[in-house]
Image (cartoon, rainbow, N blue to C red):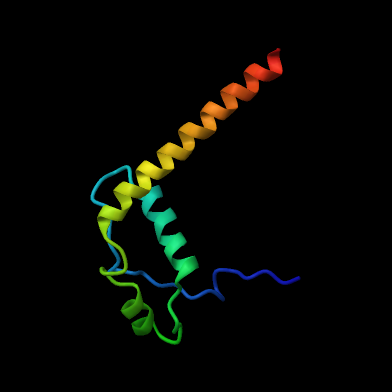
Length: 92
């Protein structure tokens, strides 16, 4: 099995996608970007221009990130609560 190295993979800097304006939402932006990309990828990877046209500032709104952060926090809290309950049950 042959693995790809960075030399074979195209590299693009997407300057026109929504950007975070704080020091703590990087993970939320990455998760949201990957979810959108996985569910609705650009149809044309032939050129950087085609990718830039598909992945632009209208691709998602920064407000989506606030909802993403709240959803992620809710899931984390539910998992933590479940872990506490599981630990308590195991101790009995």
